[in-house]
Length: 261
Ligand code: COA
Image (cartoon, rainbow, N blue to C red; front, side):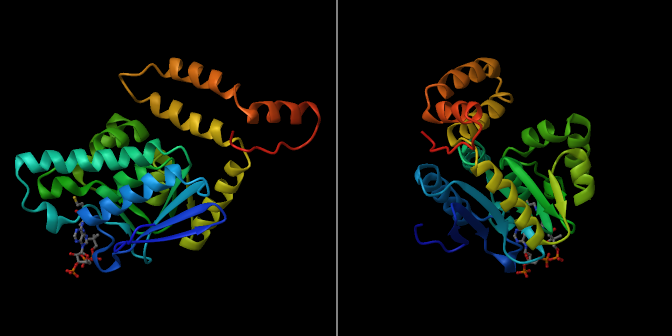
């Protein structure tokens, strides 16, 4: 990984651990941190040794408490649009990454932090996690895709309420709304859960996993017919060695060994 100032990375058994490391600022996302996330995902997509990514925030108090307010306090209309488009582009890279990306969120998961978590494929929260889109308190709205992804994840009425009130909700409520997949008591247990899920996913055919990500994302794109994407992806699967391996292994009553090709 290139020289990083705001992110800690570690690669272990095929999993890239990405930790936003601005604990003194509640891990708020400044421009530099966003750029580092972009570089990491550019590399993760192409690096064959990386099979999955887990994103966390440093410390126990906060996953990410939003975009860095000191940087957004003096925007004008032109650079505000760029600010939003840049964040949207980087979060779309996470969402479109062909390897599973899991957010493990503890403590404050607010604004851009909630938006980043929503761009991940799966979210696991600790019991102390608090979710919210408090931008309205600053006279702005979510700009990194939050208005769209929150609506897709929890539905129109609840998304409107959360964004219009700026209220925070706890982990169990977030789970009941479908905003998070699992809630675990501590960060260590939440990371264990993420690793357990990843290890299961890593035993499956990697090309098929990438195509599931494409097809699920296609369900939310108005300019793409998701059924068509699914049929095309299904057809591409059967060209792979993993398809032959998976079907043969079933018929031969043995465990498949997938190679991602
Ligand atoms: N941007 C920049 N700095 C932030 C930040 C953000 N989004 N969130 C927290 N910080 C900084 C605080 O300014 C403070 O820095 P300082 O010690 O140099 O003054 C430090 O992180 C600790 O935050 P503090 O507010 O003292 O902690 P707290 O426990 O009292 O409150 C929060 C925690 C998260 C509730 C509160 O910091 C907050 O409301 N943050 C803003 C959340 C937000 O509006 N996010 C959306 C941004 S678009």
